[in-house]
Image (cartoon, rainbow over all chains, first blue to last red; front, side, top):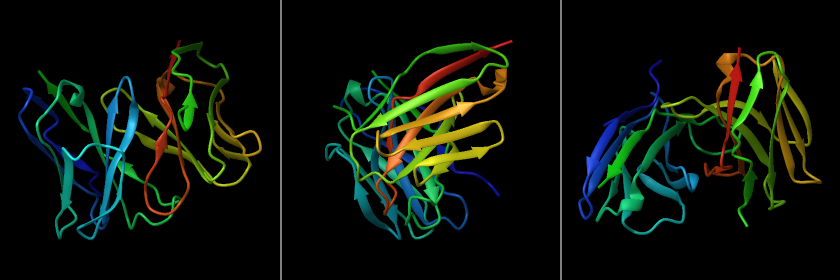
Length: 115
Length: 111
């Protein structure tokens, strides 16, 4: 069974630009969560999608948005990039996302550098 | 105060040593406790999951939860160089997926 895939793996953007990251969950998984990982703040929850609906949201500004398609693939978008948005963006999938005992499987991440 | 505190290390030990990794948390509503391992340039992978206070063992790994002290630990016996990675504790109050992670402890096991 293929794991969670994320594209692109690396990205360089400049301040003020916008970026779209993609995540394909494990086949059969319908819940997709996004996390931001930085050396200073660690791993922080961005949002979670299930059946094309955002079900949960972390404490990030509105510049961070996402969506999920009918095939469970998800994208996240960051508009008006700031230097502080440089981070590893991780996507995780699980079957339904209901219940903490359901294992979340993480992808390798997209490393974004904002210059 | 962060909801989950974890010493970032780094922690360097010789091969074969017993490693102890710890986290403290502030909210007694947290019920589910996990340990993830993250190798360089990879996403985190789930190592252990526990719900109640007490110990849970899986091979060389033992997870311990003390809800009265809001303290969770991961012990690695007979540590190997392949255990060199960052270990992250993660906590959730249940319901939908929203994990709160510790800062992660970087572990190096040298031969």
